[in-house]
Image 1 (cartoon, rainbow, N blue to C red):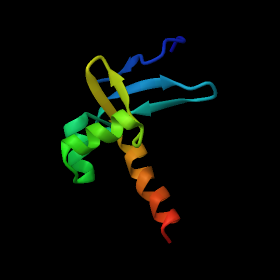
Image 2 (spheres, rainbow, N blue to C red; image 1 turned 60 degrees about the horizontal axis):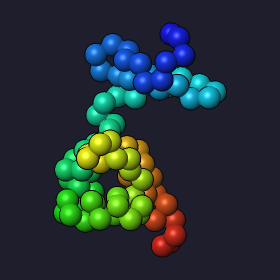
Image 3 (tube, rainbow, N blue to C red; image 1 turned 45 degrees about the horizontal axis):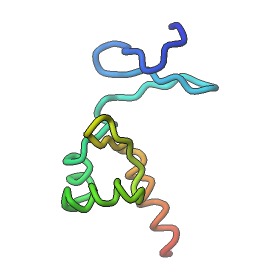
Length: 84
């Protein structure tokens, strides 16, 4: 593979270049706003507000928000440690 970031690899994964390693990301790991809301079991309006305020890790691609499932899962782990 050459040094192109985000190059497609096969039908079901995307190769992302990291400064030290290469890893595969399955497209199911990237959630749109409705999927993130369903995953967290909260209203779409709430996840949208949290994304705008930076309370959940997200990126905006054009007009659309995208979330990494692992980042949302990590929020629960971090919040759980603070409250225990």
